Amino acid sequence: MANYQPIEADDRPGDENNLEFKSFLGNEASTEPSTGRGFIRDQPNRSSFWNVEYYQPYFDVDTTTVLKRCYYTMIPTTTDYLTTHLSPHPDLYGPFWTLSTLIFSLFVFSSLASSITSYLSGTPFNYDFKLLSIAVSLVYAYGLGLPVLLWAALRYFGVSEWSLVEAVAVFGYGQFVWIPVSLLCVIPIPILRWSLVGVAFGLSGYFLVANVYPILASAEAKATRLLVIIIFILHAALAITLKVEFFSYYIVTPIGGNDPLGGADPSTPSPITSS
Image (tube, rainbow, N blue to C red; front, side, top):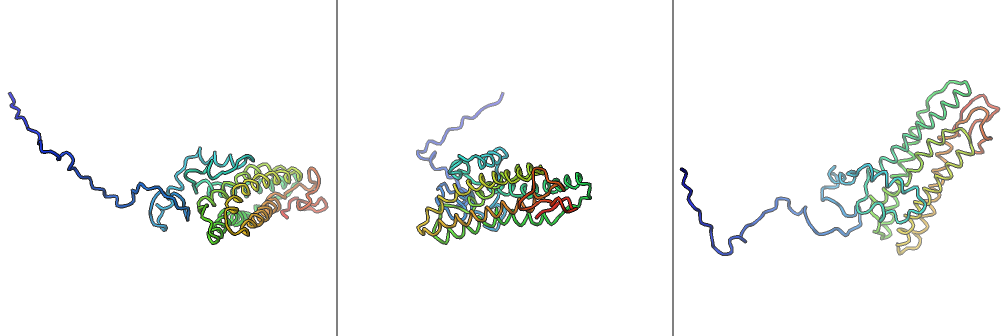
């Protein structure tokens, strides 16, 4: 039979409070909330700017959230998009996915429109890979380059209410409406295509103005509000360029009348054009 020796507990007072826990995380686990709105607001980690880990949290977003943020950019009543839909953590995955998908859609659907007009006109069809280069340059310059320049300009004027991630998110998500429009513009009817482009221009333009102008108005220099005019002009130029470059392919005899700024001339033998 086993014998058990009782062990007396140490009754010295205060010993139960002498336990010490040492953290090996350094200062990275600070519990103080971030209040800065510089390069990135509420920065989740303190990794170096040049490390991949620095950007990883901004690509950690689920599909449902991305699709929801895309959807609400097409609702005219959507205001204060930053607070309502991008808060508390804006992402970079959604804007990059939106812009990249738009590039793919522009090239694929414009090529499809061109192939349809070639088939109906009885002429051979050749892919125009120059359009892919145009789409990449145009979409990334407007969706990524413009918000970076705008953010830098606002920082120069002392406006810190907008982080760079938020700027890219607003412009990136704001171009989502062009994806379904690029699909519908396969239909070779000039007035329909111009109507679709007009709708996309209006929805995306209103979204950008509604979310960018309050930031511009917060600057002490009133001249910064004029930047919204530049944004409007660039947005109009984008819409016209997308229409003329990618969706001006028609059958020799256009359906629904001639396109005032592009499309095939019934008197010419070539069934397609992009000017």
